[in-house]
Length: 340
Image 1: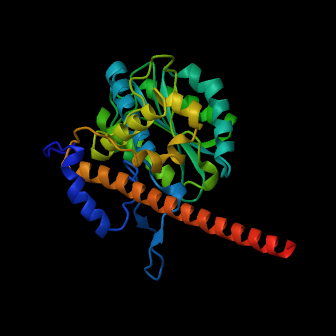
Image 2: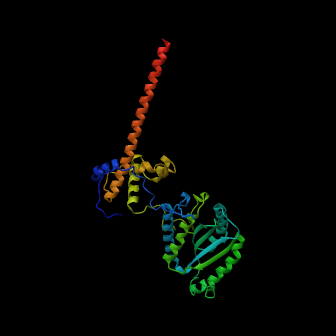
Image 3: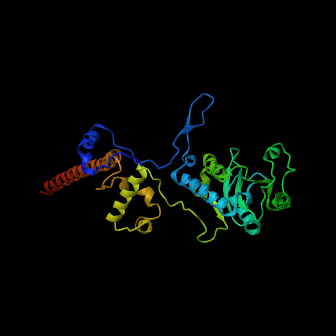
């Protein structure tokens, strides 16, 4: 949050009003953590806009943040030596995320839930459009002690302890039964923070390669946590100026419409209320101390621009009514004259 001097609504009315007349209308408040960059240069050096389905939104980043938090909590509760990083790749070419999830659900129900205490699952669509899965699972034994990760990188696995070797033997037999080919389970090489960041990055990698049919599918699954077992939730807002402005305008809008919480907003306006009402919410006036002058100016500009647009609409509507009334009167006079 900005450390500028708190500012009230009236402090900025005069200056912001002058700016509004001179400047074009302000755009809607951007998503709190969106990736709206461009990339994918062609051979001619031109840049192509990222498709909407491949934009990393604030919701995606919240999911990654919560995922990292949960992984660090697992390491603290069970010990990093009991965490295993498992990658599962299908033996055949699976391009549909729905089909990939169906097969994984079978493996999860029959194997993973019984074998591991807890786990988090992140799907990844690769550039080839193939889908595979990354899991961080909690085992019942230490699989890290004695592991020589440098030797592992060279293809020498003699330092693996018995618990880790048992896992490898298990998956060599089990994965083909459920349609998986290449599989790899390794202990965590770095610290808890490192593996948390590493797994979290797969969310952005998956979103970057998503296709239209992937929209709405879960980015992360939490296995074996049970009710109350999670340490974090995605239902939070970033503590920055844009987040402050959205939350306070939303509170004012909800109060004006008789809603006490987001569940009431769903009942009144439907499940997509935030998408449909974003402009109205951001145009809401809030009469309270703002965290900075910049935020107060933005808040006032959003409201003033909306008021200006409404005034133009009212004026055009009234002109239209007057015009329509004139035509109606002229038509009635003409009809009366003909009757005479």
